[in-house]
Length: 315
Image (cartoon, rainbow, N blue to C red; front, side, top):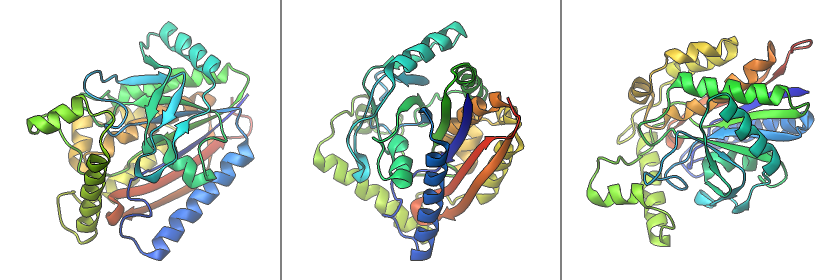
């Protein structure tokens, strides 16, 4: 049995929004290093925590957490489409374990996932189909979202399952950090409300309009203008320090409303990071292997990456 962790920001504007060639190259290099870390660890399977952006989950039924016994990539923002290689038997065993520990997670045999799940694998490895991924959706975009304490507790339960599995398990998370994309609200006008309740299978025109709106927001953010609030590198650094400290319980003090206010509408995507580090914390002491951070306004993201593995003798 052995575990490791990789976490990375995602953004629909990666390599599409305004940024210098030097910035793009630094990001590509950092993802390449993460990919080498994953290949060297050679996991039997990956447990990934990640959000959705009203592409797969909607307000007609919005769970806090959903475990995928099967999943398919929707291919938004030019990503690949098709099924993920989900270890169904392991996913069902994990669900039984979580239920036994009083986590009533939702279950999907065909979880629709967007760039929030697959972008980091495409950036690290070129595609998402070459590795077994057990996906766990974390609601970070559709209030009410789960608390940081509950995300941490769920992760710890997943970690206990992995530690007893006898397998090489890689925990992963994607999202944030400070991040204020132009996300709609259920309290907006009736047309937007209906799209957030029943927005599956949008037309090509609707997808194009959505992407155009986000790209325009990135251009304005690069110029230091609204509607997106500025990135918050100070908050990002404080959050990364919590993860680095090995004291993931400290994230319990984060309040989802305050995080949204100080770090942006998409910043609660770091709930996925907290869940992943909660899982990883069950392995004991760890050694940070890689870190990367750069605030990139034109991508509307504090781009961060972290990778770590168990310290020698940890269990």
